Every structure is written in structure tokens, then in C-alpha cells.
Length: 133
Image (cartoon, rainbow, N blue to C red; front, side, top):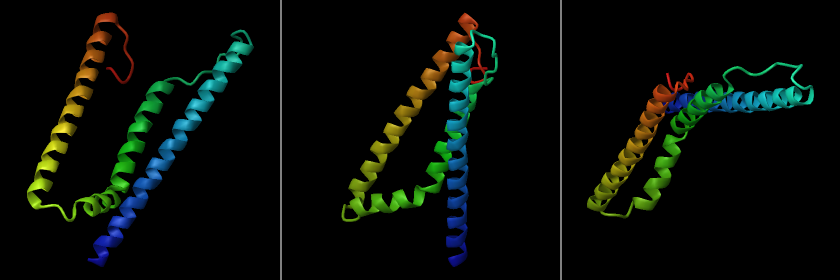
């Protein structure tokens, strides 16, 4: 059991590191893009450096940051949830889990529908990014 605890802590720290690096990349990409656009505006278009694909870089690294944070802190959040529900009857806990799962399912459907509509718009209007390919 102590080996599993050490492994869990190691995985948690690795996920925290990945999330932190992802956030740093997001901030640096955004800052570089904003500064480059401002310099482009100030020079009247003579300085043409831009960050290619900055929207995609930020969106993908945001995904990595969120997934890594969820994985890193899943054990801590379960402890907090258990504190609130430890004295509840098992049947109520089961109903609560069912409601939460239905809620997560509904949120997933909304996200999937939004991505589907974005893909249809991309095909219809020819607006294609790496995200929508």
C-alpha cells in the first residue's frame, strides 16, 4: 500500500507539473501575440512577426492544463465530497450520483452539439482552423 501511495503522489506531482507548464505556455503565447500585434500596429505593418496558430496553441494547452489539474487533484476532491456525504444514507448517495452523472451527460451533449455546429459552419463557410478540421 505505501508503494501505491507514493506512486499516486508521483503521478499527482507529474500532472501538476504538466498543468503548470501548460499555463506558462498559454501566458507566454498570449503575451507574445499581443506584443507582436501591437508592434505591427505601431510600425504601420513593417514589422510582420505574428504567432502562427496562437488560438490553437492556447486552446490545446488549456485542454492539457485542465486535464492535468483534474487528474492531479482528483483524490483531494473526493475526500471533500466524502466529508459532506459521509452521514447520508447509501440510497441518497446513489440518487445524488445518478443526478450528477445525468448532469455531466447533459453538459457533454451540449459541448458535443456546439462542436458539431462549429464543424457544420466551418464546412459551409470555409472557415477552417486546426481545431475544426
